[in-house]
Amino acid sequence: MGTHAAIFIPVEGQRYARIYCHYDGYPSNMLPALAHHDARDILAAGDLSAVSIEGGISRSPNNRAPVLTESLELPQWADHGYILRPTGWEHRPNKHQSHYSR
Image (tube, rainbow, N blue to C red; front, top):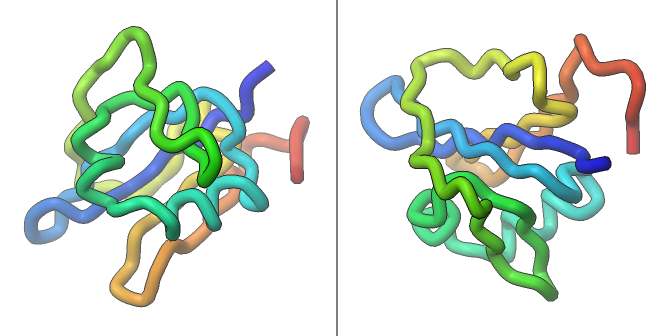
């Protein structure tokens, strides 16, 4: 079972690119991994299977482009969310997801 994450990267004005990540979306993996990689590389990859320091950025086989959105609300499917701020990555747990917390 994957720990799904929504990654939000600012792209223009008040818009964000929302990227789906299927595996290892828990904060102890994602926060260091996102800080390790350049946001442009994450954005260019589109949907992700996983992202980690050791394994790099793994694209999802479906390879969909990011969703452009003005909302930072987490989708129902996301266990965790990560938003790129000027000061670094911010973790946002999904209030609707209570079955999994790492």
